[in-house]
Image (cartoon, rainbow over all chains, first blue to last red; front, side, top):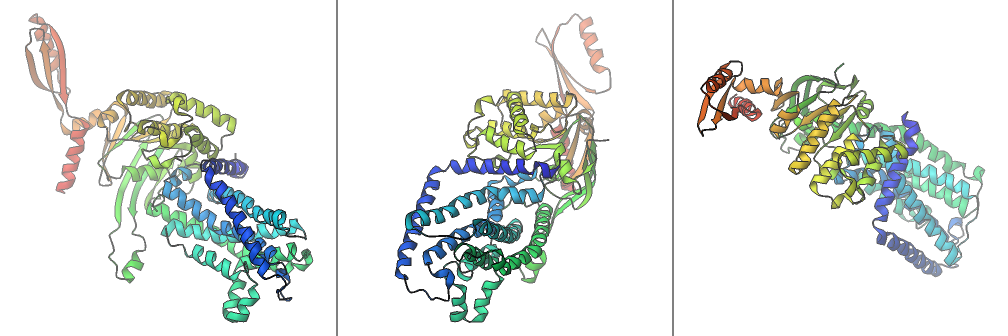
Length: 276
Length: 309
């Protein structure tokens, strides 16, 4: 049976494994739900401070709570996109199970997809919780096509997953000190417009610093999702961020897979697959 | 076609970022040569032993066969598939069992662990469940099937590693110290299982690495002695023993309490002659003990030679 036919079975293997590991720590699950509710509640009260003070040029920020919640939900997803694989690889290295996994007849793309699958499911749940709590408890309104927003979410996540593959390659070779995680983790929160409009960065920090946001895929993804969910834009009105994201994907996907293949080969040459 | 074919295999572990370290004037270690020009073949259904001291290169060799480490030069093929260019096929043909406890998920049960690996091997859940049941029965692990891996005894962890290696019915098994943590009874049963796997149809080829030389001697048709990354000798255990000494000391105990000792060559007729003489004299033989060179003597001889050179 070829690898493609076996892909769903192998993804399921990882998901089932990670689900079992997840439920073996039940307390953590409930604490995370509580933490999301606490964050949403806090943001609701902070948003009340700004009620009526929003600059009309920032159309996506008329209801700051809606913007923050979409920002946080999506940031959560993006963080998973670029950190999940590196974390999975690193965890397997630390546990000593990476060799056992690599000993099965499974190819690299399968490992990449399958080992992150559970993280995405888990993140989808918690990202949804931000929007759900906002809507149910604090009356936040979302409009526009959820399907189009989902397309943006998936596309941006795949682009960020490519950076995640680069990050995993780094973890495979250098074990620690992953610059992608540090740069993208801190960078996305600050420069992508999660908590405030990116225009403000340009206004207050100058165009050089402000333009950093343009090279981050998360900025374009978040912009597209907010245009759809908050402003109710249609496909024809969001082509610019869509094309930008596709451009990122075309460049990053083959490059990151190539780098990951080289990283695994290097670790095999050095015999350092299970070292961490 | 041989089950495992190893040709002119060498492995030197490179020093990571050697040039970078040199640039920053950091101390640079020398690359470690783990294997040098290793060549041998293992036939289908053969139990082939690999013995040597710690750091001799056994684990590196096993990992190269298992596609986990890439050779520097030379090649390894398993049932005709190259371990580098066709690694996915090679992994379909092998099962590896090591004494490494960390290779399982400690918070999952034995059954859940094996189910995960069975799915990665592409087995459907129905087939996987049956295979897991079979290997648990074979290795007497039924009682611990639902216990978390972290709660298992060291011996059971070891047996579970062998069970995992057998999951996909591989035609080639790489067993690293399969009886290391087992009690004597369990170790004997493991040896029986290894023998039966090699004897079944279709036979399983086994590459066995062990520090238990008596076990290697009992199980293996041929043994390779590896020292400092080089294969020093490959032969049957008996022929290897003869490399050290072709003689053995025989002690015959008689019913009278008398003991007669003599040294003989393996191919002479001194033993027959002495027994005949004793029987002619009307003496009753109650025991015959022989003391011959062991694989340990052979190993020591090669190590001593290496140290001198």
